[in-house]
Image (tube, rainbow, N blue to C red):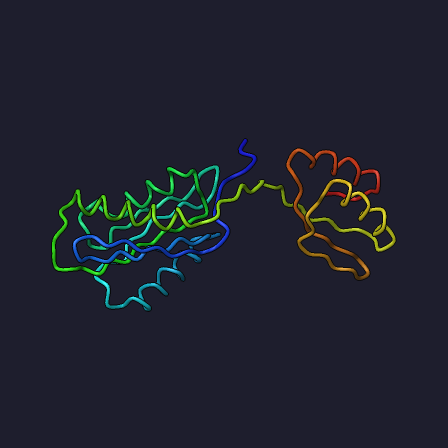
Length: 195
């Protein structure tokens, strides 16, 4: 079971020029396909006069969603070299897009492959890469009078609290290290709280 993954902390931009063609490169952390669609649409709008808007992404860990898009460039000459750079760093939850302004001189397929690869590498050299631990999510309901004992257990097991609601019936959602979920489950059973 995968315990962590590598991703980037924030968006970055890069630039590469080859025989008059300009390659603007963008790296973005992404959580899902919707994020990808929004970012690509924004790039198309902002750089509407560019000839090509190529990109690649990897989202997820166990069975990741992977896509490479050439946007009119010869097959596998843009998206695949971009994807190769993401893979070479072992990243996921990452979108790299390269916007090309044609400079008048054709680069040929091998030239395009090299240019898109270099542009993607250029932007990925600028990002901060982090290791993210994969945590198990859970939801619980409990009585208000159990709050202090519950919080002591959650602190002890270093639980990340996502949301909490204190009313007649209290609710809490959180994330915990997968190695600690059974320990959490047994401690909560003593309090008669089910995960």
